[in-house]
Image (cartoon, rainbow, N blue to C red; front, side, top):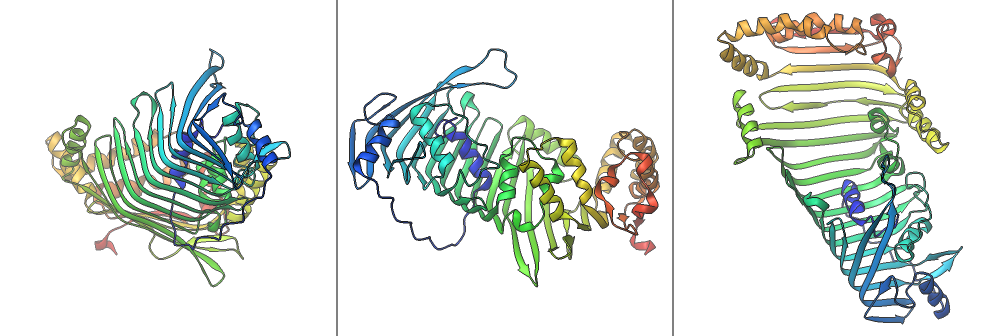
Length: 514
């Protein structure tokens, strides 16, 4: 599939990565020297020698650059929907641009390569109702596969290109940037806009830099705005997980090994929006990976996210009623984490505060130590590089991850009181009576959990959880095995779940009992 045809999808993907950083601009590499004949041959292959699929009002060639004004390109290709019964269908679209430039076009290894493609004041439309507008698109120093993808937009060729996830070097570029983006999705699904999007320095090691500013989306049921997203030094392994055709498990995505395999810094500012009747506002979210005495420390923080009900809508009215039922006008959430990765022992552990806070509601905190994270990440990467994508095979590799210790603390800070007071009023009983009734139902509810949940674990947690519901306090779940245990042991069937081997302890702490 050609690059221009999927430009709207690429815009959405770019926004998942976009970021900005305070780096100095790299010195631009020298332009590739091409002869007039070599450039003309490349233009002929692309269909830019005489009007055809492409048309233009004026064409000029100077200093190794073809410049077109009043440019139009018709795109049509067969699209096969997986599982479709109607066979392939012809998808047509049309690109117009006030100016298009191709710098240093030439033929290399039977493929057209070039230094830079520039489009100004362009519109991409298709028969399905989608339209993408942008003031300026620049693709600088594209790699061989990316060049072939762009060339396919001009030639209409449908040669299968290598997958992006395992061929980052082939899709490399010095910079890819969009300015003044406005993409209208088909069938009235919404409009995506961004003032600037910049991706810089993609190669086999990952993405050097990404940047996005003034992002917004306006859809029938969802709206959001983001002032800026910042990301720096995005690792190849993380990029591969985003673009892999085979969906990874949550564990495979969350633990890839060295934290630097993800990124070195991430920042989101000015997030706000509406979804399903919920209004949300977040001033900032930050995460940073920094070296400390031969180890890597990751600090992440979300100072506050505020949730409230959208006024004047049916979904918002429902949210308002739910919040009012619990005695809230709005909900305020906070998050912070502090982890250390030690490459010498291949161990990641938490320190200081690692907690999620629902203000005037509850606090969930966790501390853990896990080893084998780099070994596991390397094994998954090697398996995928070798063509293995079977979920069961990849899941077996999770045994390389070993748990040393885990402590989870759930502290009630009025949410239980609010809930039982509201339900007690509905049932004409006292809050204390409601707590006792709910506590009595805990055992019945736990017995109905899926068989995948180990019965010994359910039996161990039933009494403390019942006490927590009845009397409040802090529910503490600890796994402190005598020897590190493989993570899959935590979700094994009942016959393999050994309480002593895992060192499981569950209890409730209350101030008056401490």
